[in-house]
Length: 187
Length: 187
DNA sequence: AATTTCATGTAACCAGTTACATGATTCA
DNA sequence: TGAATCATGTAACTGGTTACATGAAATT
Image (tube, rainbow over all chains, first blue to last red; front, side):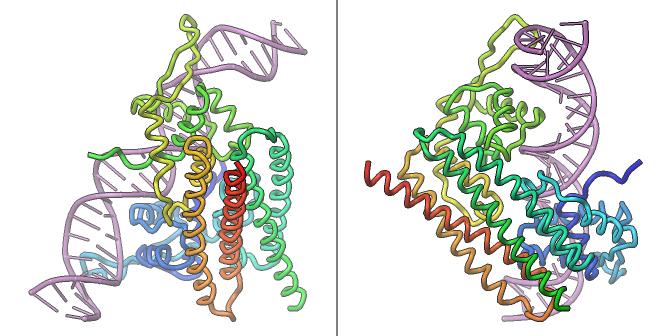
């Protein structure tokens, strides 16, 4: 019987952040509301239930500070099992679905992979990303060709946006690969 | 008492497609599964309930063909109220939240706006998009500067991805604006 | 004394996912 | 006749949203 499918993206974000430094729900909310860790829900109705689920799954362990007050502060730290789940999630192969629907997840995996698995694994992740993105670009370009040239141009233009996006993705990834390889080569 | 908030993205997609040509749930599923209208759920558990909600809200009207069979085919057409809801949704101002979290919605609005509201309204939509995107880019560049230069580079690199994305968005929009203005200017 | 910030949480709702189910029609 | 395709739908689950609620501590 295998571990239940994928961590939701918010849970992955929380797990990765807490793995670097124990945090409370409030700390996470502030982080998501004010820093470039934008893009993740800062709403208490998302954070606190997610923390509860992670603790129930024994991936996090909460410690209550200020026990005597009515509103104690609870700081969460990653467990051994949690770290295994994190490295597992970061090591999974990138899929075509990921590059289309879960780009935020890939970026998250990229950043945490750097800290948790090191630069080599991160370069490998990025290379998978580049390959899949370029495959997808091939398909997209075929789709563009299939659109009749005489009709209204909006569909073609919207597709053009997709092309720009995926090209930018691939460009960025190749650039970062180059930087990381220089670094590890020089280090 | 005002109309209940926003149409969900899938409902907007369905409404816009059906406004061009009446379709069944199955037609929509095929479209979402095989054409560049990728990116929308082709799962029956999403499509059929969405169609039911749109019909209950009187935005669509279903007509059953092949009445006598057990599995009739039901084709949906947009109603007057549905067309009003569609133009309303397309005419709403673009928000900062849209450009960060709902880019898919903006692309959808762009494409349908072309057909439903015409090129001038579409150019206006794109111009809003460009302004908000460039404002956001300013903020992002400030965030990049705030990252300490000596630490691990992963956070900065992930932010760099955001910069590339939003720059590509703005570039695409400006390009399309230019094309549409040439067209309407020449036409 | 009033406001803001710290800090945690729940309840109702919404909409999407996967998996399941049914059965007709068309094609090889 | 068996497989693929047409065609519609439900049930259980998941997890995010908004809005609400509480109350201490720090700041003005």
